[in-house]
Length: 96
Image (tube, rainbow, N blue to C red):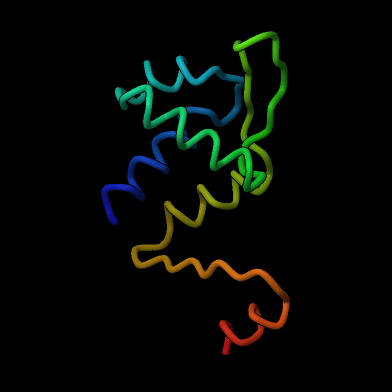
């Protein structure tokens, strides 16, 4: 799990302060293209990155405010746990 956290942190760090394509992130991080593309799909669905421009298969992204918060959490927390819940009631139960 630690390796995944580092890869996720590297992806988000490479995007901060600029707009990027998945290819830019591949070049900056050295991660495999398929891994970056899969991560982009998940991050976009979660609102951590935002699509800025799209023309055919060419897409440009930027980090959202939520992405910046996630990056800060990844940088500061050694043991970070994330609970995924579907309702506010489940969120309240997870917090107790």
